[in-house]
Length: 297
Ligand code: UTP
Image (cartoon, rainbow, N blue to C red; front, side, top):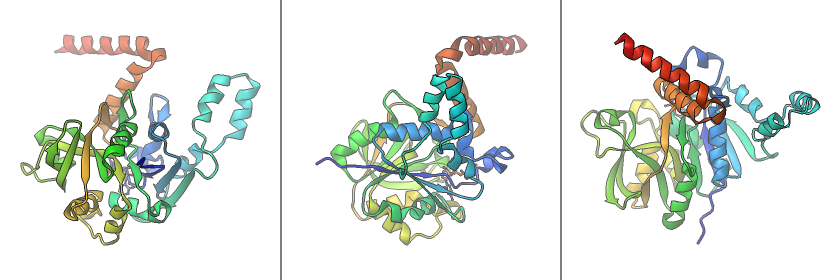
């Protein structure tokens, strides 16, 4: 049986404190890698995976995000008049069909689990995807598409998983692996931000999920977990406790943590070098920088 997943939640209500002062007035998701905001990468990945309904959980001060997906009639007519068809075409990828996009508010930043729960009425009784736009994944086949293909075989809940060095595990949700089947692992437990030395594996959860509506029911009962926040990881772990299947999927691709400054800079370099129109000039600059640095050492 084909399992259809056509709805995705984009939780974008976090405070983005690691990027202050920029995030005082600019949503983190509008920050750009080269010339595209983070949110555009997330939307493109969702579209490629067949997502038709895009649900944004936002908060105060995120109106730039809503504007980004609107038509811009003045700009478009000016581009049309001056024959800038390529730019017009590029703008088209930022437009959404009427009714395909919905925004709702998380009134307090009570955690990722709470943000997802805020969208429960829009999800209803279907499986759904969750995409965290600050995890940007460069991959030949978009990560969510890889996961949805694997999900056709498994059903249940599935999280994107990535190997991390032991000293980094305490920054992530970590999987306790039951069976390792290669790309896929079945999971017997999940711990959010384990204290140093207690992580059950080196497989960390990153920002792509396929979830059943049962997870939303689990969130109904949730109180604060690690760091006092309502954790999505805890609600998924409840599925395991109820003996319903949860899988980790080792995606093929490179993930950049664009919620952190170092990750954002790394992504900027990687995506800059990935662009044909910039590669030569930008690559030469980086090489110069490296040789200056080496000489200084
Ligand atoms: P982060 O842990 O990166 O938090 O959230 P943050 O607030 O965005 O950033 P920092 O740590 O203060 O710099 C991961 C994802 O969960 C969303 C965020 O918007 C981000 O996409 N989130 C987090 C919410 O939507 N609501 C919350 O209450 C917390």
